[in-house]
Amino acid sequence: MKKKLSVTSIIVLFTLSACIDLNLNPLSEGSSGNWYSSQQEIEMSVNDFYRTSFITIDDQTWGDDLINRNSTSVVQNGTMTAETGMVATRWENYYKGIARALRLLNNMENARTIGIPEANITQYEGEAYFYLGYAYGMLAFHWGDAILDKVGMTLEEAYKKPRSPKAEVLAFSYECLDKAAERLPTSYPGVQRATKGAALAFKARIALRNGDYETAAKAAKACMDLGVYKLHNNYQDLFTASWSDEWIFFYRGDVTLKVFYWGAGAINSFVPRLPGGWGVMGPSYELVCAYPCIDGKPIDESPLYNPKDYFENRDPRMAMTIVPFATAHNKSVLDGTYNPEDYLWLGYEHSPAPNRTTVYRASDGAQVSNTDSKARAEHATYAGFVFKKYIDESWLENNRTGAPTTYPVLRYGDVLLMYAEAMIELNRCTQEVLDETINKIRQRAYAGSGFEYPRAVIGSQSELRTILRTERFIELAWEGHRYADLIRWRLAEKVYNRPSYFLRRAWSGSASWDGNEATVSAEYRQLIRNWEEGNYPIGGIPEIDENGIADVSYMVNKGYIVVASERKFNAQRDYLWPVPDGDRMINENLDQNPNW
Image 1 (cartoon, helix red, strand yellow):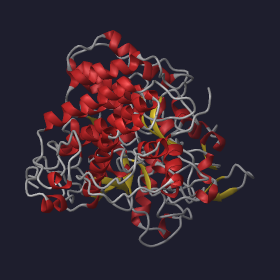
Image 2 (spheres, helix red, strand yellow):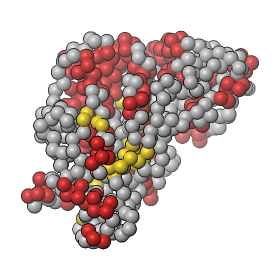
Image 3 (tube, helix red, strand yellow):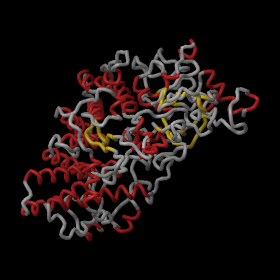
Image 4 (cartoon, one colour):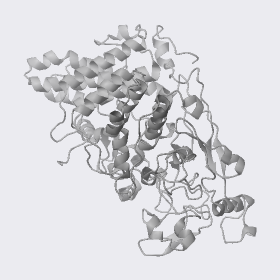
C-alpha cells in the first residue's frame, strides 16, 4: 500500500504557507479583501478546514469509558453554562468555518475567470460543501435549532438572524453532504482529505446522532458499497498502524512538527509510572465489565466468567484495549507456571497487585520497585487498569512529549455499526445485515485468538439493540464517540447521575508494604485482602443492563472501591447545549434552549 499523507500534513502545509485571521465574527462574512485571487490562496482557504478547531474531537473525559484521577468534565458534573468556554468556542468555530465555506463557494466564478481548471474547482466546491454539511450537522446535534446561513450573511444580517428549526438545519446539512459526495473523489493520490466516502460516512453519523435512521442507513450503505474501505486485519494493530484502509477520515500525529492527537498529546497521563508516565487516566470499571465472554454473553449471564480472574474467557478486544495482568487466582499463579514475560507492558512486568513490591524489567532481567502498584505508589493508577489501545513503544520516545499516533475520526468499523444500528431501529435488520456488519467486526476481533467468534443472530429488536450498544461500547472504546452515543440514546441521565469510582486509598500511615500487616494502615490491609480473595480491582459479578452498562455501586458497599466524584445530569436541560451568552448579547433574536 502506498504510504499517504494525513490531514495533519494538510494543516501543516497551510500553517507554514500563510496565516489567515482566525478572529472574524463567526456569524459574519468578514472582510476578505483581495483574497481568492489565485489558486494558491483558494487552496490555502480549503486546507484551513482540516483542523481540529473546525472538525472537532470530543474531549477524552466526556465518556464513561475513561476515569480521570485529576478532574471531572463539565458534561458530566452539571457545571456547563452558557458562558462555558468550550461551548462558546465550538459554536464560534463552526460558524467561522461555515462563513469561510460560503465565501469560498461564492468565489468559484472568479476562480474560473483566472483560469483554474474545472476539475480543481469541483474539488474545492466539494470540500466546502463537506464542511458545511459537517458543521450544520454538529450544530443540530449539540444545539438543536441553529442559525442557518446558506448564502453568506453580511455583518448586519448576522446580528439579527434568529435560529432556524433543527429539521431545516439537518436538511441543509444533508443537502451539502450530498453535493460534497457528488463532487469529491473516492481517494486522492498521495494525500488524505475529504472524500466521497467521508461525506457519506459523516452524513450517516449526523443522521444517526439526530435519530434519522432512514437517512443513516442509506448513507452508511452507500459508503459500504463504494468498495474503497475494509476492516484492518488486526484490531490492536489498527491503532498503531501508519496506514489502514479502514480509516475514512483521520488526524495523524507528527513528531517533527510537534502535532499530536488524542492520548498521544498527553502521553504521561496514559503511560503507567514504571515506564515514566503518571497513570492519570485509565479504563473505567464500567468499560472493564462491558466486555462479554467468548460465548458472547455478558459477564452476569455467562458460565465462563471467572470473577476472580476477569481477563479469562473474555472478548479478545479487552486485552487489546486494556493492559492484562495476572490476578491472584490466575491459573498460572495457582499452578506455579507464571511467567512475568507473559505480562510485559512497555518493558516491565505489569501488575497492580497491592502486595507486589517489585516486578521484572525486561531490559536486564532485574527486579525493580513496582510503582504501578499501591505497594509502592499511592498515585499508581486509581482504578487499577491501564489503557493499551493506541499505545506502543513510540509513546516513550521523544522524552514522552508526543507520538505519531493516528486518531481515526471516522473509520469503516464505525460505518458498519452505524448501518446495523439504523437497520435495527428501522426494524429491518436481517441475518444478512448482522453478518456483513457486527459479525464481520467480531470475526476480526477473534482472528488468531484460538476461539471461534460468537455469531450474532437475529432476534427481537430489543435483543439486537442490546447487542449493538454493547458492541459499540467495546469496539469504539476510547475513541471519543461514547458521549455522543449516550446523549443520542438518552442514557446520559442514567450514566451521569451515578458516581465515578476509584480503588480504596492505600495510605494513611505507613508508606510501603513490607509484608507485615501490623505496620500498614487498615485501608491498605483491606486492599491486600481484596486482592488475595480475588476482589481487586473488580470484585464479584456486577449486573449488566440492557444497554451493556454495569452497575458497580455494590462494590462500594463491599469495600472494594470508593466513590471518586459525584456526577450530575439534568435530563430536562443537558441533552442540548446552551446558546453562548456572548452571541445572545449581540443578537437579541437568538433564543435560548430550555432551562438554560
